[in-house]
Image (cartoon, rainbow, N blue to C red; front, side, top):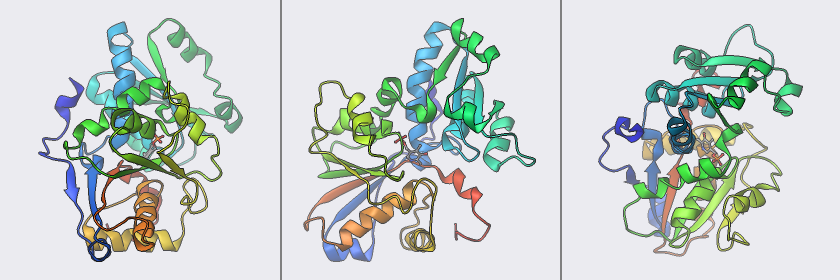
Length: 304
Ligand SMILES: *Cc1c(COP(=O)(O)O)cnc(C)c1O
C-alpha cells in the first residue's frame, strides 16, 4: 500500500561518471534513495515502513518519535504519516524557539503534533504523561530515535531489493544509528562487503549496535565501520566539505546533504584517490537522502 505512492522511477540506480573514477578504473553506481519521494528522506522511508506495518494491523493510528530541530527523521515521519493516514507526534529536543526551523514548520504543515522537551527530559527520553497513556492503550506505536531497532532494520532490509541482480564488490552507506547498514547487511551482506561511514565522533558502540540487530552474527567481518570520516562530529562541517559537495554536484549532478551523504561521498572518493579499490572494482553507494536538512545553511553556501 505504502509503496504505491513512490514516484514511478524506472530504476533508482545511476552510473556515475567522474574523471577520477575513470582514471582509477573504478565503477561507481549510486542508489538514489533521495529520489523516491519529494519529502520522505530516502532511508527513513524504509525504516518507518517497518514501524507502520507494526502499527496498522493492531489498529494503532499514531506514531510517536524523537528528533532535533533539523531532523530528517522527524521530517520523514511527518510526511510518511500524512501519506499513510496515520497521526504523527514528534518529541523535539529543547525548548520551543521563537522561530521554528524549516523542518519543524514543514512537520506542522504535514499535520505532526509537536511537543518540546527540555534537554534533560529529551536525553532521558521522558515521554509526557498524556502520550504515555496512548502507548499503554496501544493507540500509538513508539518509534525509537532515528528508527533504531529490529523493526527499523526489517524495513531497511528492503533497500537492496531496489538494486538490480548484478552484484557489487562493495556497498557504502552513511551510518547514524546503524539501522540502515544492519538492514543492508541482512539482505545483501552475502554478496558484497558493506562499509558504513559513521557521521558521529567516537561512536565506538556503533559496531555493537549493528550486531545487536543481526542475531546469529558474531562479528561484522567482512563488513566495516569507518570512524575516520565524520569531519568533527554529528552535523559538524567545514569549508572542505562544502567545497567537495559543490564540486561533486558540478561534476555529477548529484546533490548531497551536509550531515550524512556529503561525508559519505567524500569518504568514498578519498578512498578512490588513495587507490583503496583495485582497478575493475564495482562499488555501489547508497544515497540515503536527507537533502531537506541543507536548509539549516546560509543561503548561497551550496550551489544546488
Ligand atoms: C538518518 C539518516 C542516515 C542514518 O541512518 P541510520 O539507519 O540511523 O544509520 C543516513 N543518511 C541520511 C540522509 C539520514 O537522514
